[in-house]
Image 1 (cartoon, rainbow, N blue to C red):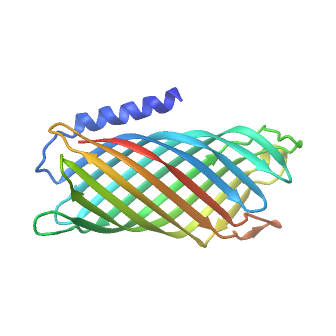
Image 2 (image 1 turned 45 degrees about the horizontal axis):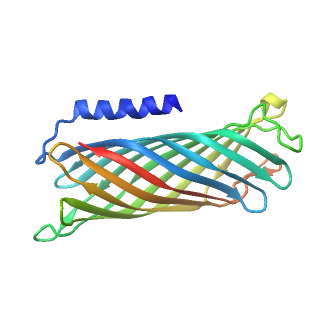
Image 3 (image 1 turned 90 degrees about the horizontal axis):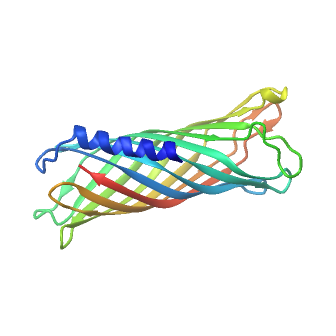
Length: 256
C-alpha cells in the first residue's frame, strides 16, 4: 500500500512540474487516485471479489482534434471462492491499463454543450497471485497473467454549469480484439498453459464533476466498467470458461 501511495504522489508531482497552468493552451494533464470494487466470475465455476486502489494519469491535446493518452495502475487483494476447489483469501491482484484515444470535438455556439466522439486502442493487463497458496479443500493455486487488446468507441459530453462547475458524462463501448490467459503451473511440475480468447465486449460509463479554479481543476468521477468474455480455445483438454468482470468506483483527479 505504501508503494502505491508513493507512485500516486510521484505522478502528481511530475504532472505539476511539467505542465504550467495556461487556460488558453490546448494541452492539459491530470493525475490522481482511483479506488474501486472488483468482481470477476466464471458462472458456475469460481469468483474473485475484492477492492483495488491506485493511480491514474491523463495527457491531452484538444484543439482542432482531440488526442489523449491515459494510464492507470492499481493494486489490492481479492478473495477466491469455488464450489469445487474451495476458497482462499487476500490474493494479491494488480492491474495496468494503457489507452490512446483520438476524437473530434463539436461545440454549440455559446459553448453551452460540447460533444467529443472518440475511438482508440488500449491494452489491459491483470495479474492474480496464486503460487504456493493452498485453498480450504487442499488445492494448490497458481499465478495468472491476463492480457486484453481492445478498441474504445465512445462519446464524452461537457457542459458548463453555474459556479464554475463542469459536468462531463461519458459512455463507451469496448470492442474486444483478443485476449491471452497465461496460467503458471510449471512450479507444480505441470505445463504452463496459454489460452487465447477471441470473442467478447466491454462497456464503461462515468460522470465527472470538475470544479475550476485559477490554479488547478479538481475532478470527482464515479465510474462503472464491465467486461464479458466468451470461452477461450482449448489447450491440452483445458479451457478458460466464459467470464464477467465488474468494477465500480471513484476517481479524484487534479487537472493542470
